[in-house]
Length: 263
Length: 329
Image (cartoon, rainbow over all chains, first blue to last red; front, side, top):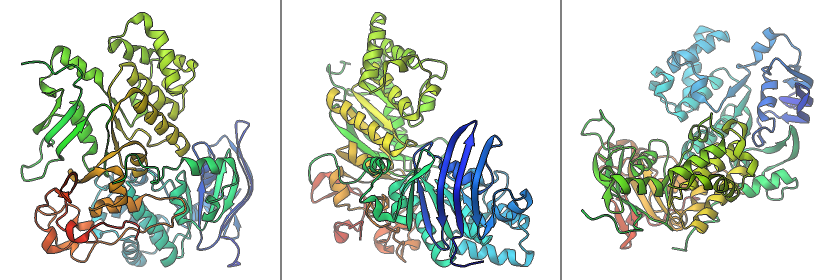
């Protein structure tokens, strides 16, 4: 594979459900080792776009266009081939971290089973898990816990640890920090930055939180009504061109407008 | 016993402690709040993360959770001793706005019917109901046609406006808001915050806002109380706390708020001493604190005035030597 080609490249992607065009994206790519933020409000098409990468669109959706991952077209490939990629080479971290785990399995068992499922040799499993725990700074004792015994931030680290243990090349983070407290959100965001540096993981962060993504991503794509309406580095937000971007920037609660008198 | 003076609608918590059943005596309470006063015209925020006790505080102020020590008083009378007319006055004056707007409205009732019900519950004449519904919908920025809709037929932002309209139908003086905008898009959130701010000014309401979002707090409240694992760690004017935090947790909260145009600020690592502090006895934040020392933080921490200002309190043994913390450094 050409190492300079984007790891993920989406072209002319159109998704329609019951005759309504919900996604119409001419081009979206993630380079190797890049963090890209896809930001939009509810109903903008973020989750549909993400589902299409994973081949998990609703049955009544029709799709056109191309989704190329590491040089291979994912659209129209067999479910068997897709499974090679989905969850292993492309990992997903969702908003509901605890729901991603299996409620009846200890966190450690859950990771172990996923490694078995993706045919990681038994001899490698233990060292991979140890490395992953270290990478996400998770106390190994927590692996004995069930999902309901983990905090939201801990559950999110378990989900990310699995991605690391599987050597995922692309991490899709769908509102992965939205349900977390701000201090925990900052810790998980820091973890994303570290993974990019230490593991070389590419990350597509899908979020409605413009400020968080602006601080993390190398590039930001603003999506509205199914299409990318603005794109650029974090500085794009200092001079937003599109109406939607301007509204989102203006609506972000800042710490500059503070109630009350000076101390 | 004489009744409260008319117009005394202060809601005051004194030496409030809430313990949930089954917790050992040695365990510190889920919430300890030395003092909190809410009155029309005041706006107070309770800030903290999950498990900090902020929702417990709000529930105690509503009388839904009974204090295990101390009291919550309305017009000078403890909530559990309110009877008859005074109990009705309390339920009319103090209205909660919940985080979960889906659960706040009856799914089988139209929004207009829900607001009319609030109007009657507040002692309003049934014949005025339809005019009141129309007026309140307008006041919260909803078209009159929303009255006929059911909760599932409107957007999340519209539903929160409807919930606010229903609370206003009772003609309250104090609003207790629990994360009123979480789950809403930013552009919707800002409109709801503007609405709450406008209502506070126009109706002279008192606000108690529970939130983990300092940006939201800064927008709505002049005073802020920062809670960490059930204890007040810092309180004072919102502006003072944001500009010159004295407790390391307040600084960490401030640091964690993402801002456009400011590069991401990684959380600061705990100090090497932090692991040695027994947080069951000493400072509860020590295990995460970049400034923790085994000697200063191992003992119970007291809430102390900053520069003799009783309105500005901080619970940190190291605060005099640490001085004003720069959360952005």
